[in-house]
Length: 314
Image 1: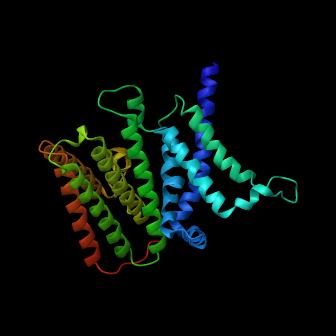
Image 2 (image 1 turned 180 degrees about the horizontal axis):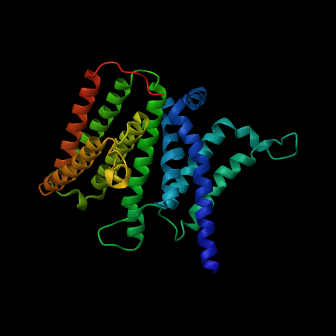
Image 3 (image 1 turned 135 degrees about the vertical axis):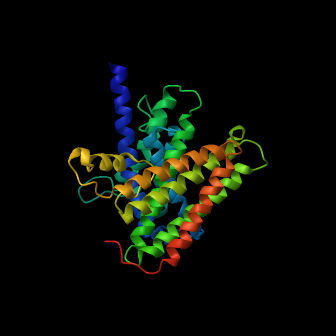
């Protein structure tokens, strides 16, 4: 029982530490790290260092939540906070608040709590998606590290896509839809190039393999965020559960009027066709289906751009 309580405690600590920081990370995506960049330049440091906040405030917390590379992610998290704190709030360590509290208590919490996570590790409850669960169960061919990296990259891509749509959502939706497709296409084509490499299977090269995972995860995250913002009925992202549910629940067998059945059936058929085509192309190389997907995304970007101005998404 004590081991169970310890693992539950580690899970709650990970959720607390990572969840609180993600609020800061999402804000950086939406509004940009301009304030931090200004602080850097005022101290004679290059402004581009501010981009490192996306690693410390988004990628590291997501990995901590997923329980993937938890100790390393926690150390990156703590280092990022320590650097930012000393840069902006360094004087707080020498002062007390009017209430008598230490002025640096919040910053100390953000620095020490991830160090505690790094010391304790993720615990048994490290993985909240299916593949992570399979990997933990030692299913052959699955890896906690690879699954966690995919989850982290996807979450980061979704945050970037969400920030993109938030900034451009008041304009014609064809414009930001085209941009989202263009970003996805570029990421997928780069992933295909990385996968192709020297012609060998990337499974034997960890650096290339994680590069492909990160790039495709980012691409899918950006795309899903854009699709979510579009809010088109029955427009699927990566799963068909709701589409099939709607198809069955609104069917004549359930007393419905078969509303939108052609579009729903088309979504299912196209998803199946894409999966089948990808499986066939995968027989030749890992890079080929990724490259084809990138080209299709590029064509979608061009089509959305040519569609002209549309109404803003509300």
